[in-house]
Amino acid sequence: MLTIEKLYAYHTIDREVFTRLLIILSRSVAESVLIMSTWMWLEDKDYSNIIFKLFHASNLILNDVADEAVFILNCLQFDSDTSIFLGKDGVLPLTSTLTQKSVTLQMISQKRFTTIIGIKSFLNNVCSRIFTDILQDHVLSCSHQFVPNRPILQFSHPTFGSFRAINKSLGFYDHASDGIWSWNPTSDVSEDDRTMFLTFSRGFPVSDDEVRSLFTQTFGECVERVDMQENINPNEQPLFAKLLLLSITTVDEILKGRRDAKFRVNGKHIWARKYERRGNH
Image 1 (cartoon, rainbow, N blue to C red):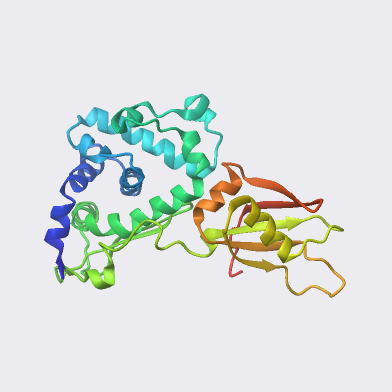
Image 2: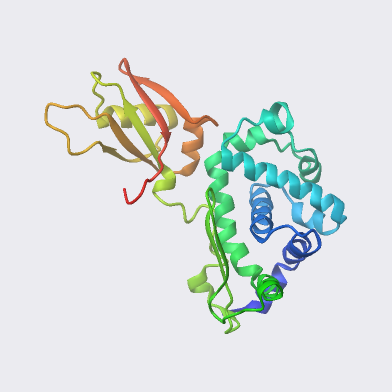
């Protein structure tokens, strides 16, 4: 059993930086947890010691680097041309200086879906656990209401999904069930996250074997399943399909930062874009 106190102690620096964002710099709760999740994701991708260096930085520098993290979040949320933010390539100068590696919005855009999943995972698997008492105090100071073992904060974000922080009054985390140490940022990727939506030209029928062959030859052994359009007459051709990939990283390799990508197999065109579930379908 992992005590909450030990968990908080392990993340002392993260908690101090988060407190400064939320309390001293008066950033919103949603923005503060998303900024922390972004920095944790960058650290996980070997852009080391961002949070540790910010722990020792002034509030002015912390605020400016947080603004750059918001640029990343906006770039991911709105799927925007990076040039509208910071000029060509969208260089983030303070973040690059801190990590001693070039960090650009172009780089983030090229790995858009992998980055979204990574930030979302840190948001829900780490930040939802290590900031609970800070959030509880903040909620109490704002509303003067608190119910044990009920969500102390929850919100929904159009890109990063729902966030839910719950106070655990018993004082322990069962790390067998919570998986706080065995978890990694790509362990909870859903099928929808790894799915592409393909469309075909009418009059040029494409088979599932052709789809599988095209993407395997182009990107290696990346295909888990091809689901061709169903409920069509025997003499009709499928006009679309869903392509389930083995890894979210292949989605970014296919799109290369674009909204869609065009391929050709046996003289027939295939258009690919990220699958988005609508309603219950």
